[in-house]
Length: 88
Image 1: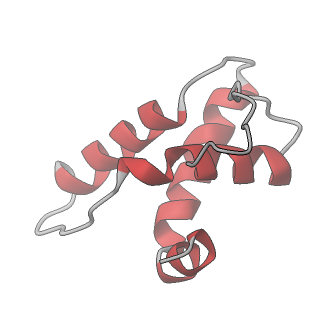
Image 2 (image 1 turned 135 degrees about the vertical axis):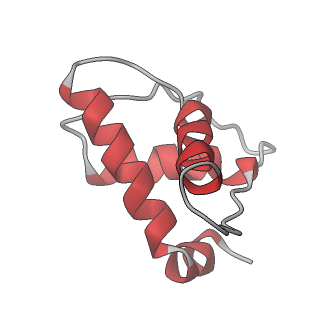
């Protein structure tokens, strides 16, 4: 599955990620995409009854990059430079 397909099928996940990242960015703080994924897991698995919402950690770097592209006014994440042979 490509990242675009994942986003198309999981809009609620992206919306939750954006919500947390903006809350953190509005305070001028840095945070990790993995940390936001942990918050999302808490919200969906602890606070929602019968939730089967699963969040793969593999999407973290792509979520962070997409967020920074779409919301440059909130520089929440520090990104590593990717090299030709790197995969995310």
